[in-house]
Amino acid sequence: MHIVVPIKQTPDTTATITVDASGRISWGDAPLIVNPWDEFAIEESLRLKEKFGGKVTVITMGPESAKEALKQAVAMGCDEAILLHDPAFEGSDTVVTATILAAAVRKLGTVDLVFMGKESVDGNSAQVPPALARRLGWPLLAYVGKIREVDPAGRTMVVERILEEGRQVVRAPLPAVLSAMQMNEPRYPSFMGIRKAARMQIPIWTAADLGLSPEQVGAAASAARWPAVFAPPKQEVQCEFLQGESPEEIARALVDRLLAEKVL
Image 1 (cartoon, helix red, strand yellow):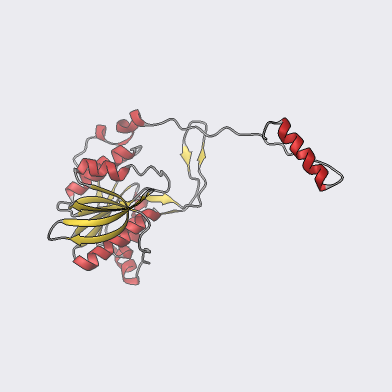
Image 2: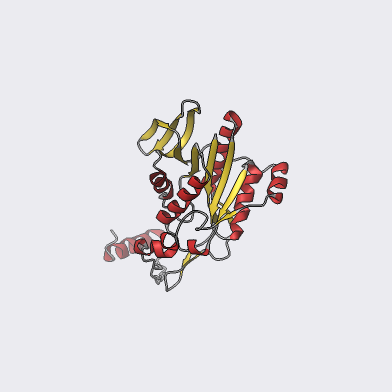
């Protein structure tokens, strides 16, 4: 099987987001990590490779510094890594990102499965997996919590989806796009994997390499769908300490104030 895992380098989950007056979003100097949901997709893809053979290719779209995320995936056991990097990609929204990823999957040739996290911890939109499936024309298996069965020869797989109403068992033909919920615990990078990642020369694919024009990617293709972003208004808060001769008297004063403010 050839499994492709699109990942994203995201700020650490403890990062604090800020929005300036112009609507520009910043994560400050927070360290960047592999999107935690994508680590579940990496782990499951490696387990499928170990069971059925084949290879796992990891791809990401971002600046050259995103190679560090790819190297971590290789250190975990992925076979190949590709960086999608082009100044023209800057400002791509989820729809355009899916267009770029779909072009990369097609360029890779025969692919049996695209496995990705259900969402990124910075955007939390969960829009890229369905948009990617749509562009590839493949079935979408979203919010997968367990892989029950894979039949590479019969070109089918059975998964268990985690929904609000319960769990849903679905059979789908391959190739397909999967998005992972919390599944098996991701493995740590191995020593040999770290050495392999350190030596690996990661190729960079641009828009031209993917057969995409500047008008199809980046801010130019995304602007019409961009929402306006505003920082929440600051609220001035004043504290008042109620006095009384006893806790009961203070409690009565508090109730009177809550009634006056129409809180109760």
